[in-house]
Length: 160
Image 1 (cartoon, rainbow, N blue to C red):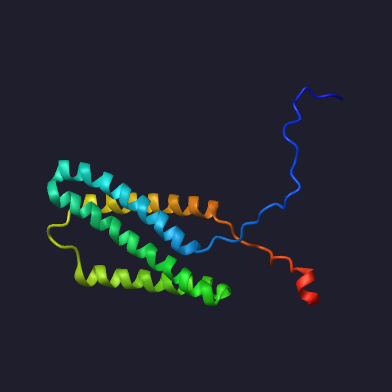
Image 2: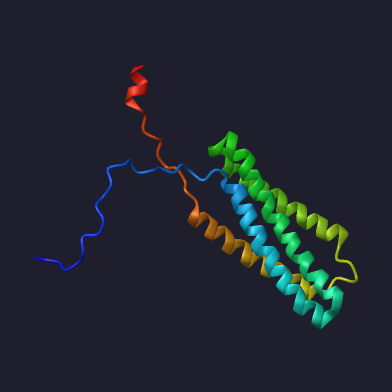
């Protein structure tokens, strides 16, 4: 069997470089997701302002900021707890999620919605932030370099 493909350049004899795990996964996800959500909220505020004035624009931004706050807490918990106790991070996520849901519900029911808040744009801003935040997180996780195995030990260093 023959091939008419060109052989290309010869392989080098140098070592193949390695890359370790992503340095700060949770903060990287926080940055990515925040940028995506803020960009979406800016674009959402434009039609809100055109259709319902400043009230619509502010309502859509506040809905998105509430979502961003909700998700940011989880990523910050992952960052700080994951450093010292990686196996306990999932338990902290669950506990934090419960506290966030109950806490936000209490705040929303106790304080209530201000009279000036435009409910439709508040919900639209929240949905835009959720969708873009989650998309950015999924993209960030797909790009993360998670180290699964320990690095091999240098045999020369262990004999010394």
